[in-house]
Each structure stands twice: as structure tokens, then as C-alpha cells.
Image (cartoon, rainbow, N blue to C red):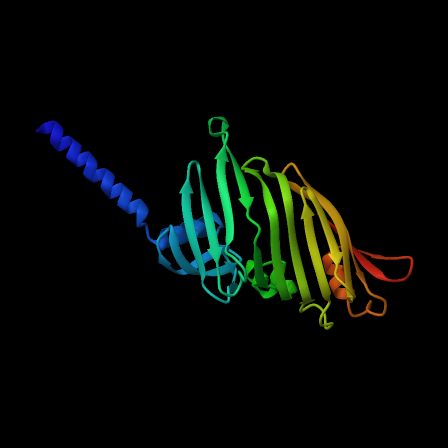
Length: 264
């Protein structure tokens, strides 16, 4: 009888634990993400559970910040646990025009401290550039406007707490179309694209633009090394003077045009 009673209690306790895990409210996930991002990424008005739910995504500057921006529509998520990892599906009517964004994260080398191996399935994400204002400096000063489109093709890599991102493979493309800023009266400044092929980075200006951006870089040992240049198109030097001074080290080229060195 005692043994039977003990097993009954253990079974009941296990059932409670499983029920709590399966039906954990979405507010638990919102609280965890808020703390992990130090208040920069917020899930407001959460509904559903940790595993399947929705919320209003808000980007904020963290503690002491007065500004915040909201995604134009609610974001939905579906989290599926796997052995030593999870698969996450994210979708929003405003911003995932084709299919949900799918990311898989698996913990490798568990006995040796662990490295997070991640894969981002081929997907597309569209966002208004004004969303970046909510992240605080320097975005709240630039006050960018325009359309951002992010797409990937078999993008994968590893992440560790000590080494950051490494072993990147696949391709990614960020397109910034019809960009404007509060620091210039020229509208638009131009359209640009930042692409990655494995560890290599490339910044290009897409078509004619008042502000010309170009540069190359790479991702090594968890860090980004990038060197580029921002140049005012001929006849646009005076209108872009303040912006170029803020973007980087200012210089005057041999042809008389102003430019700034962009270095990370």
C-alpha cells in the first residue's frame, strides 16, 4: 500500500509538471525575452502558451529609453521542442509575405560546454525601417524611413557565449529601399543592399542615389570586420554634409566630393 501510494504521488506530480510545461502561459515567454534582451525586445499583450501564441512585438531602447516602436501587426509563434534543441516558426501578416520564418537551434558538444548550432530556413521578412527607432541610439537620431527586406538561403552557423557567431555558411540579403533620414532634406537618399556569402560581407548601392554606400567585410571569430565608404553624389555635397560627418571619419576626395570612412 505504501509503495502504491508513493507511485501514485510520483505519477500525480509528474502529471502536474507535464501540464505546467505544456500549458505554460505566453506571459512566461514574454517575461523571459524581456529580461534576456534587457528590455530591448518586448512581447506585449501576449496570448496563448509558451509553445503556441501571439503578441505585439515592441522594440525599445532598454532602461531609461523614452521611445519604442511596434510591429504593424501581431506576431505569431510556434515552438516545437527537439532533442537538445527547438524549432521556432514566426509569422506576422505585415511582415512575412511568403512563409513563416523558421529557425532551428540545436545544442552541440553538450559534454564540452555546448555550442548552439542554428539554421535559418530560406525565408523572407519585410519591415518598415522606422521600427529601428525604438532601439535607441543611433537609430533614434537617424530616424530612418523606408522599406527593409531580409531574405536567406540555407543560412547556418554556430554561437557560443565566449566566441559569439562563427562557422557561418549560406547566404543572406538585406535590402534597404527608398531610404530617408531626419538628418537630411534629400528624399530619398537611395536604395542599398547588404549581402553575405558565408563569412564575406558586401555593401552596395542599388541604382542611382544621393548618398552612395559601398564596402566589404567578413565575420571572423565571432566579430565583424568591415571597411566601407559613404560618398555624396556630385551636386549633393552641401545637403549631405551633416550626415556624412555623423556617419564616420570625414574626408575630402580628390574629385572634391565629401565622404566618410565606415569602419567596424
